[in-house]
Image 1 (cartoon, rainbow, N blue to C red):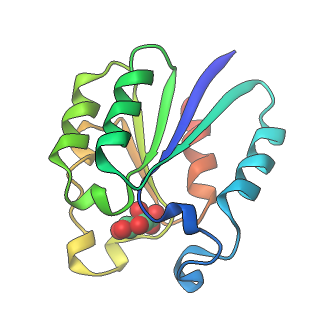
Image 2: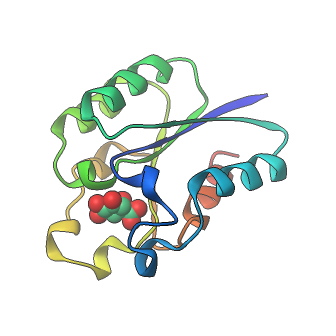
Length: 138
Ligand code: DQA
């Protein structure tokens, strides 16, 4: 069975209550349980942290054994050389995802430091971005 992990960065623990006009009103926990019941032939782990170093620790921990990583680094997408370097350092492929279309938003969101080390990028499809990334691993 393939092992995939979804890693969510800062403020994504507030999905469902945070800026619902942009991010929707469904909590990630609800979405995740739907996703798990739809894809029973995949082992889907989940990790969320608001702390940059914890995201790096998790990438290193899973990055040599899992089959795929779906990463929404949230605000760290635009700032973190550390996360970009860990994606380059590990062997598990990483798909970068965003719920919103970062290119249709403020200019500072247009630059992702992590895209060049990612296998691919999916953004702008709401929570469905995660499912599209999952499908991209098969
Ligand atoms: C986000 C986009 C980022 O710019 C923002 O900082 C987030 C969420 C998204 O999923 O649309 O927190 O990664």
